[in-house]
Every structure is written in C-alpha cells, then in structure tokens.
Length: 121
Image 1 (cartoon, rainbow, N blue to C red):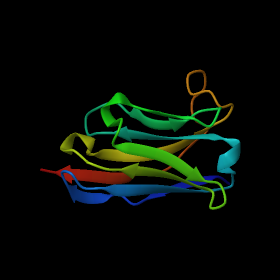
Image 2 (cartoon, rainbow, N blue to C red):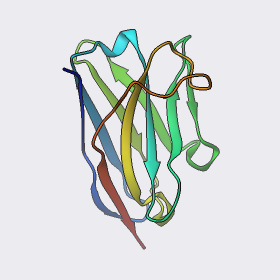
Image 3 (tube, helix red, strand yellow):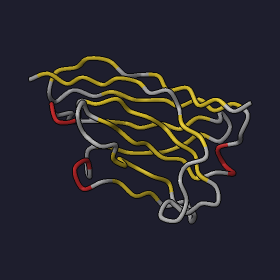
Image 4 (cartoon, rainbow, N blue to C red):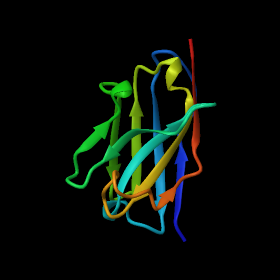
C-alpha cells in the first residue's frame, strides 16, 4: 500500500521559512517524478514545484527564487524549502507522485493528505 505523508506545515509570519517533507512508503521516490501542489481556500489546486524526468526542477513563477524542491532517495522523502513566505502562499500543500514521468500527459498516481501552511502579515 502506498502512502505519501506530508509534514512541516504550520503558521509563520510573512518573510519566514518552512520546510515541508513528504515521506513515501510503498513506492521508491527515485522511480517516480515527485511534485508539490497547493490549494488555497476557494481556489483551484495549482502546481508549485515538480521534479522532471531528466532530474531538473520546475517551479511556478509565483514562487520562483523563494521555493526549492528536492528529494533524498536514501530517505525516500521529498522536500519543499520555502523561504520569504508571503500571505498569498497560505494554502494546503500536497505532494504527489507520477509515473510515467510526464506531468502534462498524466495525472499523479498518488497524493498525500496535505499539510496546512498559513502565512500572516
């Protein structure tokens, strides 16, 4: 059985930092492409950062220069380092795994349950 378990969310002030973790079990993250998505209250879910098939990363323009996605294959864990947080980053953050590794053609195979990030002024 596959589980993606996010942690690290919380409440921070504007300008603060958080690091989200997504611990995977039942799959090896190195055999999937992993990504982070978020959904703010009343809004559609959006992609935040993804690892691509060649190992490079893609981040949304709204978080470019502030968020970094990376994974530790030995720990089977995906991370999202979030710096210079803004109130508009407030959302539920989800990790996801997709295979084949093509974010455009395929929907993620697995989703985590989410971790809440709240950024105050």
